[in-house]
Each structure stands twice: as C-alpha cells, then as structure tokens.
Amino acid sequence: MRGARIPHGLIALAAALAAVPLAAAAPAAPSRMTAAEAAANAPIAQAIADEAGGALKRFYRTRHFQPLWVSHGTIGPQAATLIGYLTTARYDGLNPSSYDPDELQEDVEKARDGDPRAVARAELALSRAFADYVRDQRKPAKRVHVTYADKALKPKKLKAEEVLRAASFPKSFADYVADMGWMSDHYVALRKLMAHDMTTDERARLALNLDRARILPSPWVRHIEVDASSGRLWWYEAGKQVGEMRVVVGAAKTQTPMLVGSIQWAIVNPYWNVPDYLTRDSIAKKVLGGRSLKTMHMQALSDWSASAHPIPSSAIDWHAVAAGRENPRIRQLPGPYNSMGQVKFLFPNDDGIYLHDTPERDLLAKADRHFSNGCVRLDKAQVLGKWLLARPVGNAGGKPETAEPLPVPVPVYLTYITAEPTRSGIAFRSDVYGRDTKAG
Image (tube, rainbow, N blue to C red; front, side, top):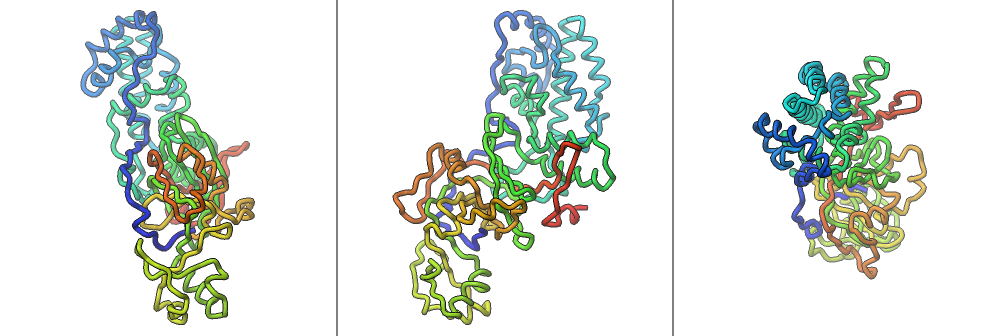
C-alpha cells in the first residue's frame, strides 16, 4: 500500500552508508598470489612500477605493483574476455573505437614472449581500457528518470582506481571479468540479448531496458531490487543473488515509481495510515452508510503528528470528507486483518512508498500482480526481514508500531524492466505503466 503520509517520528534518519554501484567502498584487496607466483611476476612488477603513472600508479602501489591480468608471467584469459566486450561495445550503446580493441590485442600479442616490459605495457593498457569501459557502462542514461530518495546512492562518476580496486576484491578476477561482475545480473542478461536478431522497434525497447538496468548495483553491493514489471524482488550480497520472491506492485493508476532509497527501519505490528483518497472514496461512504470505524478495525486521529491522539468518529464531518473538503487521519489497527501484515520496511521518500507484509495471499499467486496503491507487498516478509535485521523479526511482544532499526541501512532499487530472456531469445512483457511507449 502507498501511505499518504508517515509520521515523522518514525523516520528519524540513521547514519547511512553510501552504497556505490561497484564494490568500490571496500579497500583494495591484497594480492592473493602465492609466494612462487609473486616471485615469477617480480620482473613484471618492477616494470609496472617504472611504467605506471597517475591513477594506475596509485592503484598498483596498493598491490605492491603485482599485476592484475597476469598469472605466472603470462597474460590470463580475462584479457581476451575484455577485448571481446570492447569489440561488441555497441551492445552497451558505446562506440568500440573508443577503446581501441585492435591495438589492445596487439599489446597482448607482443607480451606473449614474456618480456617483462612488454607484459607490463599490456597489463597497464588492459587496466586502462577496462577502467574506461566500466566507467562508461555505468554512466546513467539521461532518458531513464529515477528519483533518488537517498542522494548518497545517486551514481557518481567513478575514478579509474575505484574500478580497479573493486575488480581486485573478488577471489577470482578471471571469473569477475567473465561474469561482468561490476554490472547487475539483469544488465548482463539483457546485454547478451543484443546479439540476437530483432526488429528495429524491439532493439530500441531492449536498449531502453538495458539503460534501466545500467543503474542497478552489482551483486557485490548488498542491496534489494524490485521489478515493477514482473512483480518480483531479489536481494544480493557478496557477489551473489541470495534470495527472491513474488511481490504485488502498483496498479496502472497507482504505479510503483522508479525509486532508490535506503531501508533503515523494520516496523513490527504496524498501523496502516489510510491514504486521503481512500478515506474520501471508501471509508467515508461506508461510515455514511452505517458502518463504524471499529468494525473496520480502524480509528481516527487528531492530526498527522507523532503526538496525535485518537478521537471519536462523531468528531468528524464525514459529509465534508466524502466531498473532499476535509482530510482526517484514519489508521487501521495492527492485527491479522491489517493491510501491512506483521511488518513493514521503511526507507524515507516523498512518495510514501515502502515494502510490507500482506494478508492478501491470493494476489501473490496471480501471474499479473499489479494491484497495490504503489507500495510493494511481500510474499516472504519474514525471510527478508531476517536478512535485513540479521535475526528473526519477532512480534515485539505484540506492541503496536514497534520500530526496529537495521544494523546497517540497505539500498533498495525499484525499477521497471519489461524485457526478459527466453529459451528462443527475447520476450517483452506487457508495458502496464506505459513507460516504454512514453520513452520512445
């Protein structure tokens, strides 16, 4: 559900960690080479120290000038993988000539005889091209409009040493390159589809979806992704997807926005603050028809502040509410009938969007799950809560609206990806929100 307003007392901002698109927040990983391998690479390391400059020198200094692309004196297979990416950079919406893949291939060939200077030059050329390519790949497209509720998560121009530090962090650099580990799983899957035959309109639509996936973090960033097209949610950490579930998302008239924020709180036994339009169009009509707030498990409050107190239904001019002249605060009480279920997860944003449990399990079983007022209804709220809190959610002793702060804020990305791989190639889901058409 989309809440019209959330009391400010529940949204005290925690000190947020700024998650970046790569694992660049981590310190440079020390070289994992064996003593024998380091000894074999010693002449190359000396040559790198002599040849490197600027950002590359700063990065390699943290590795004691040990190479990234070389194993036992030889350029590894990840070089060929990178050159393959650069040659097909048009799939990323980039120009292959910007990276001189042919010249890079020549540098690698010259290094085949093992001359330390030639190997060092190829090493540095590969790192330079890799850093340029990753920075260009991760540059957000202007046509993708996303609201960053947490400004710290807005993509920034990456530095070359940040790209290289992130790449040196995983245990296997070769696997990191092969998996395109600096990009989201969705981006990698969609990029592969760009090689398929398709119509001009299909290719344009796929490129738009690729741009939406471009701003999603890599699996090395601990985060949550929600796709409002497919009605699915995934969560990631340490380079892997560690969970997924079905979710109910906004209907066509009450869309789940493209939004990025940081989840900071779990609210156990939540109230549900009824949106103004539902109070006007539904609650008021029921009260005027003879139903009481009590039978609807609801209560009226004096105002929208954190210190609001309950007031009798008779204190409200329900005819004025139904006419849209007054907007009282109505909330649903915690319990098995509450639209929020047992827990909701808050990330401060002006749209009143959050993730929450739901008692309406039948909607989660449907193929099309566009039914909510904009918020995200979770199939496995307790499972996600345990991952977020690093412990079971619990019931807070039944106490209403109990705020449980997360140990560390977790970024959440609400996106909209209508393209998906199939056994035969590519398929496009129905553009429920009309965003593909508008962008075109």
